[in-house]
Image (cartoon, rainbow, N blue to C red; front, side, top):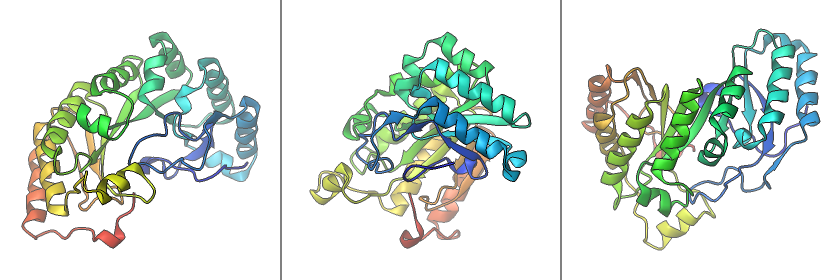
Length: 291
């Protein structure tokens, strides 16, 4: 099988077989992101996708595949009929597979009819990863996310209503100093409204040749330091109401690694942040952070 360009996947898919169903990202204009800038978005021919699946299944590795992640940035944007063909081939070739997942953009979730999402769930798509990034419409507009918080929440709830598990990502520090409070408050509200099975919090980094870098260099965007990021994260956690949600802040971009289950572990998570703020827990140094 062949991969095209850099391939990205969520941290929890580290042991998964990654199959490129699409190339690139259907939106690809977020001010902070460089992940798919070298690619022009398009749907890979279905037969090419099936060929990859068959090739791996015929190898010695095929018997060990338990999880499959459909890449790149928005596999769900493909036509439902195409995805059903791919999912059915997975079920045939990998009878022991435990789950099949993919990224889902707000747009792909909003475009899909509820019955289409239910069909995809019935054919094996068990979870989607959705980038909220921020619940603040001001922050989303600044970062050219392309959707409002309400639209992203609507898309996430559609996935859940179809029986899919939902994993949502937010980015600490994305509002900078000016919008930090509203970023924390509104992100907590949006996450609470969706109450996803999983929440992953990353920490903002500035990459070269991005609109965000231009905003930072021009003084239009002031980055939070590590202390401010931790305080913002503590505020966000304190306002979240997501019973049963698995919370993870263990990405390489994070200054502090946190993990727990909401709402029961809220106090413990905030205590860990307090310990870090008081210097009792060490933080990841800047040089070791990666986004």
